[in-house]
Length: 123
Image (tube, rainbow, N blue to C red):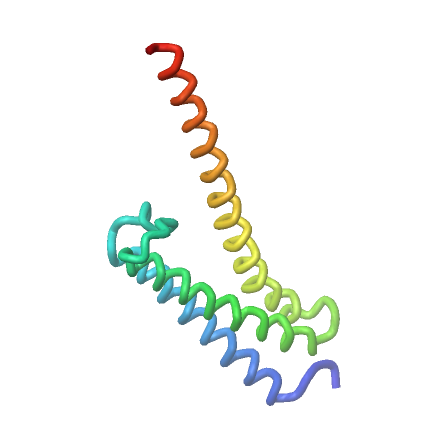
């Protein structure tokens, strides 16, 4: 026998289907509003951004399960390599959101200092 049994194959298929549905629904939630600029708005009045991040969290949790189940296949198998894709997308999303938040805070500090220096120089 070269790979796992039918139970593992069925579990991987169900997890992949659930991940695709959660990922697609999160994209649908943010595109239904038509305003993607509110994605990172931390004001709790903007529900679409919270729905997007919530569904992405669900998709990321399922991605960890997909990664674990795909490790049952031998190295080099397509199922094992494809099991990395959902987890990689989740990691990239977390890195992108973290970078936007960190650089946004840095830019806010830089521009506020610049504005204060400029106003002090003018007046």
